[in-house]
Length: 424
Ligand code: NAD
Image 1 (cartoon, helix red, strand yellow):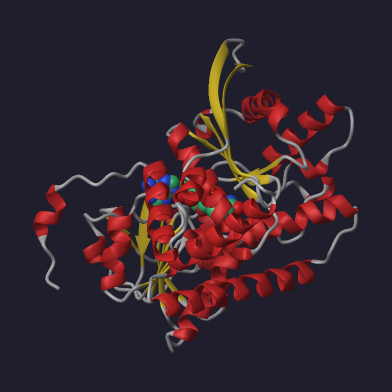
Image 2: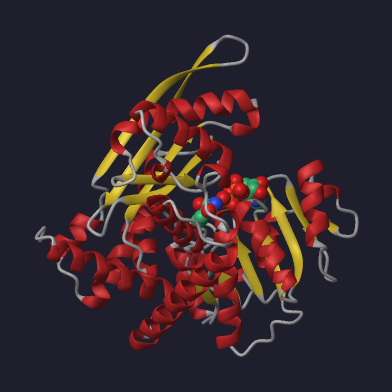
């Protein structure tokens, strides 16, 4: 069908909370889910809004705001990351907690979805200020989290050190060592081997599976990656180890491109010491957003939400889009890409490796018995491939895209758990 430019005149609703509600409606309609089940799942069960004072290095006091959303706990405690970002909103945190429910459902984890966020820009703060913000936030949400209630983890601009401080704060408040309250911790205090690479590694498993199912060669297949943090860097490293050519990488400072392929390790060194833009053997893209429109085999959005919308979806040329980030495509973009025959591996499947190894970390904390990295990666591989196969089989059954299929699998799981518990 020819591209109708008039479609662009109508503004698209990119509020992530509205988007996830729409995704629920669309999948629920296909399987004829009852309206009361839909009504329960379209809102989080509990949302906490907090504000807390933090002493800055110069002695001044700043008040920070944050949220924690717990979507649905029919299958088990809620679980999901904490984001530190200046653009955090309550609707974003609610949406992310809902995607977590469906992500856990796709992989078959005994969890519901949770998510947290603090409105702050970690790049503007010293390490000790970030420590006090982290401890202040954990103190503010401690009443509603816990190893059997709600278990946070890292997300955008939070890391294992922050998880360590938060675990320490919670344990001190309770007077007992509680490693299972949070995942993504440093190894020495109960972190899991393989956790920091898990989101990227799981995403790579799904990409390789998709290439194989489409009958595409892995060797020299080209890839562009938007976002070069925890998720994006590992995807870049592992795909280039697998023989693929990473031709473009971007972060919040800009985008670099080389048709011969970028040396991922070198780009990483520049990222850590100065900026990816200092990498010499490449072109700097004038408009970083154009990375999304490059003629590559695989495109990996690994930064933030709503980067492919109805404004640019028509120009996406990749054959596979793997959503390492949460919510990078709007529903309108989804439809356009589906019509173009592009395989979209949805976020709730593509980046489920993170929560899967977080689950392994929690299990290891409960047992105080720790696994080798090889064992973790093997278990992750099995769970990701099983989930991928289930999602593609359901998509084929209903002749739908992988996102609707993944939602259907999860909706059925959560609905069954709610029935079993007598909620509905
Ligand atoms: P991160 O903070 O480690 O990295 C984010 C990266 O995105 C940084 O390189 C930053 O420079 C870049 N970025 C920010 N704005 C950008 C822009 N406008 N254009 C290009 N790049 C930009 O975060 P992360 O943990 O890698 O998370 C990235 C995405 O993956 C998020 O959507 C997150 O929710 C999702 N995710 C992360 C995990 C995890 O375990 N860390 C798990 C599941 C999903």
